[in-house]
Figure 1 (cartoon, rainbow over the protein chains, first blue to last red):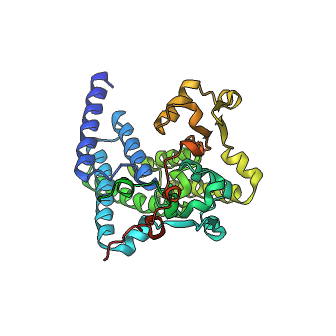
Figure 2: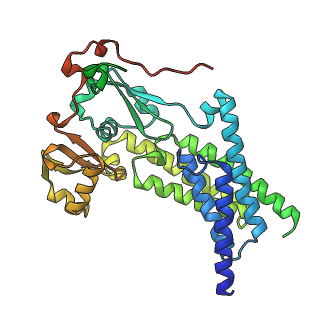
Figure 3: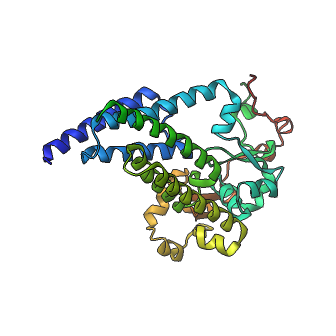
Length: 164
Length: 177
């Protein structure tokens, strides 16, 4: 196979993917969830068969187009039906409340307390500051969000200078 | 390439989408979202398997077997590393201290092959310009660096000023509908 043909295919694949991804909006392939990451990987993998001419352009276009179309349709449907959103995207899991870890929730997410500590560290909180955490949630995207108790939140400018 | 084969390609892509969605939800939020470089590899493997299915290079049955075995092993892995501390250390690794009370931990850095410059870059990304402000910097098992400031280097908190606002707090509002 000619080198020029490979170059042309690479260009076409690049252009086609660009159009597909741009047309589908930012959130597709934005790595906003583990599933989106896998989808992005699959889209990338679809390209190499095209480059080596193992599949035709039409087949590549149909495969990539179908995936992105379905993803877009599911995203739109999730916007309409909260129940579907809960099922497809998942719901946040409360791991810690009022400074205390919730063993049942940790078990459901298969997370050890040492891993919870690591998540808190990544939010800048040492283990001995657990009591400053009102709620810690494992969000559907796989990271842990922290709501601190009021007294542990930063002072806002208006509290010193007024206004707001 | 006839129209029928293109139709099948589309249908296989649709089926793969549904199966992958199901698998990822079954594996849970932790998988790939965070906390082990290996989880990311599993995601890559799944992705590699899937495109052969879509193009029809392997049969549907072969593809599904491959996907479900990978998913099942990953699922078992997550329970094993949850159930046993030793398995957890083995499967997920342990956090490595990089800075303790403002002092670079050369042993940890060597073990993780991190240069002083890499550590300082991670601190800068957390907005820290001075090593002395760091109580603990740790390379976590997912490859991220966590940074805990010395208490005196943290922003002033409401509790420090005894503000009334602290009593009431400002909860996140939820939108209706």
